[in-house]
Amino acid sequence: MSTAPSIESPVATAPSGAASTDRDWWRDAVVYQIYPRSFADADGNGVGDLPGITDRLDALADLGVDAIWLSPFYRSPQADAGYDVADYRDVDPLFGTLTDFDALLARAHQLGLRVIVDLVPNHSSDRHRWFGEALAAAPGSPERDRYVFRDGRGPEGAEPPNNWQSVFGGPAWTRVVDPGGAPGQWYLHLFDAHQPDFNWDNAEVREEFDAVLRFWLDRGVDGFRVDVAHGLLKQAGLPDFVPDPELGTMGFAVPTAEGDPSGPGDEASGGDEAPGGDEAPGGTAAAERASHLGPMWDQDGIHEIYREWRRTLDKYSPPRIMVAEAWVQPLSRLSRYVRPDEMHQAFNFDFLEAPWDAPVLRAVISRSLAVNATVGATTTWVLSNHDVVRHPSRFGLDGGRWRGGIGVDDPQPDAALGLRRARAATLTMLALPGSAYLYQGEELGLPEHTTLPDSVRQDPTWERSGHTERGRDGCRVPLPWESGAPALGFSPTGRTWLPQPESFVALARDRQRDDPDSTLNLYRAALRLRRERSLGGGTLRWLDDYGPDVVAFGNGDVTVLANLGPAPVALPPGDVLISSTDLAARGALPPDTAVWIR
Ligand code: NOJ
Image (cartoon, rainbow, N blue to C red; front, side, top):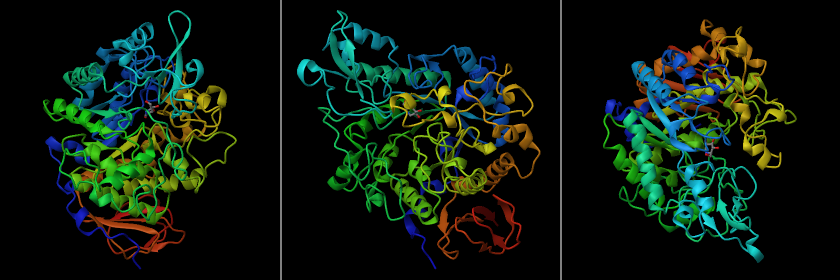
C-alpha cells in the first residue's frame, strides 16, 4: 500500500541534486551550532568562551561537520543570553576579545571548518549607544527614529500604542520616563524589554547594518545566521493584531500530512513569480494567508533588505552565505527568503516541528524539497537548537506538550524511547538531500535538562510569562566532555552557569569515544557515509512498498528506511551501511529505528 505523497518531478529537478563545489559549499553542508556560553569554558568562570571553543575545535573536525555557527558573543548585558547586543563590532569580555575571535577563525579554517556568525538586526540591547541617545532625545527626534517609539493610547497616553504581545510574554511595549521625570512615549520590543526593536524604515539603521556585515566579512567569516529574519519590518500604522483563533498568538502551526497548515495547496507555486518580484506566490490568497502571522512578521518589504545584503556579500570571495531564522508559514512564504538574489538558506522549522509520525514527516519532506526547488534553493533540515526542547526529550513525550520548555512538575519524557527515536530521526535527516544543522550536544544524545530548579532559570521567558513557561534553559546546559573532570570537563574550576544533570555523566564525550554503539559514533559514521555517498547533493526518490508507518526513500545508491510504527518491518536485501539501533533480528527493521542499505 502506498501512502507516500507523489514527488515525481519537482524533487527530481531539485538543484540540491547537483554536487556542491567550493562556490556553493553550503548547499549540502552540515553546520554545527555552537552556543558559546555552554560549549567550553577556558577561563573557569562557569560561562563558555571563545578560547574554550578554539581548544575544542578538533572534536568537531573529528565529528565530520563542514561548518560551525556561533550564537552571539558580542558585547551584551546578557538579558537574552547575548541576543541583546550592545556593540555589534566587539566581543563581550565574558567570551574573550576580538583577538580570541581571530584565533578561533584561523584555527577553524585550518581544520577546514567554515564559520558562520549570528547577526541580530531586529533589535539591539537597551544598553546600545543608540538607545541611550534615543532616551535622552525628544519625541520625533532622529535619535528616536532609529527605534520604534510611539505615543500611548487613552487618557495621558497610559495604554500601549497597540495590543502586540512580546514573544517572551507580556506586552511588546514599555513606557519610558522622560529626562524630566514625566511618563513619556512607549517603545516596541517584540522580545524582552531590554531588546528594543530597530526601525528598519530608517536609512541610518540600514547603513549601520551594512557596515556591520562588512566588519565581520572583512575579518573573514563565511556567513551569517540572521536572527528573527522575518521581523525587521512592521506593517505600516502598527495595527492591532487579530489572532487566528485556530493558530494562536504566534501563529506557527504544527505541520500536518494534509498540507501546509496555513496555506494548503499553494506550496508548489512558491516560485511562480520572477526571482526578485514581490508578488505573493499564489496571488492575493497566499498573501492573506501569510497575514495570520500578524502585522509584526513577514512583511513584503523585508526582501529588499536582504537583496541589499546579498549584493554586499556577493562582493566577497570565496562566497559568503546568509541563513534566515524565520518562523514563517506556509513554506511558500518562507521560500521567498531564499530566492536567488536573497538569502542562501532558511531554517526548516516545519521539519523541526513535525511530530513522530510517518505521513507527516513524508509530507513535510516532500513539501520542503518541492517548494525550495521552485526558487532554486537548497533545503535545510534541523531537529534541535538553543530555542527548543532537545529532540531526544521531545520524542520521548509521545505527543506530550513541549513548547515552552519542561519543568520538574511536568510529565517527564521517556529517556530511552526518546533517544531511540532521536537517533532514528537524525539518521533519516542526514540522508536527505540538502544541508543539515546540528545543535551542540545532540551528537552525544543529550536530553533536555527537565528537572532544573526554577531558582536557577535565566531565560527571560520564565519571568515574562508569569512563570507559566519554563523557557529554554533546559537545552542550554553546559556540555559534558570528560566524565571524571570538574564540571564534566566543561570548566577547569568546576563552575557552570547552569547545573548539569546526573544523566550527562554517562553521556560525556570520553565515555562515548570508544563505544561503537554510542550516539557519538553513530553521528561520526553517518556524517562520513553521507559525505562518501554525496547524499547531501543527491536526489530523493520515495519508495512506497513499506507501508504507512515507514519513511522510505532512495538517495543515490542508498535506501533509507525509518520505521515509525509499532511493528517490525521486513528489510529488503542489501548491505546495511548503518542503523540507528542494533538490528537484532536479521532481516527486520524494529520500531523506532532507521537504516541505510546499499
Ligand atoms: C531567536 C533566537 O534564536 C533566540 O534565542 C532569541 O531569544 C530571539 N531570536 C530574540 O533575539
